[in-house]
Length: 88
Image 1 (spheres, one colour):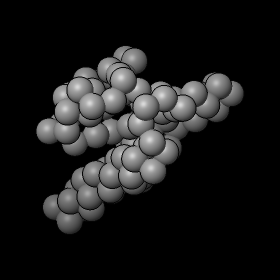
Image 2 (image 1 turned 60 degrees about the vertical axis):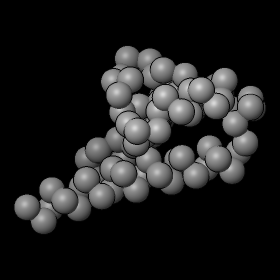
Image 3 (image 1 turned 135 degrees about the horizontal axis):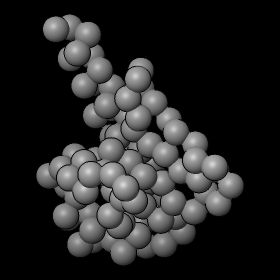
């Protein structure tokens, strides 16, 4: 069972609530290739655009504080896009 997390109407993170072994996050497109090069835990997302999303496996070579930082970044990316749409 997937747990989807949203900012407004846009998803920024999801994970399997039963397994809780990885998450999929919206990511800055300029950082994705570098993340994959630096961490084995970072993988292409399942069934989403590889340009904007990454999968991160837990308990591997990416430290928890880095994962938390990317969850926050994902939230901020989506939140800022929601604010821009409200202003227009």
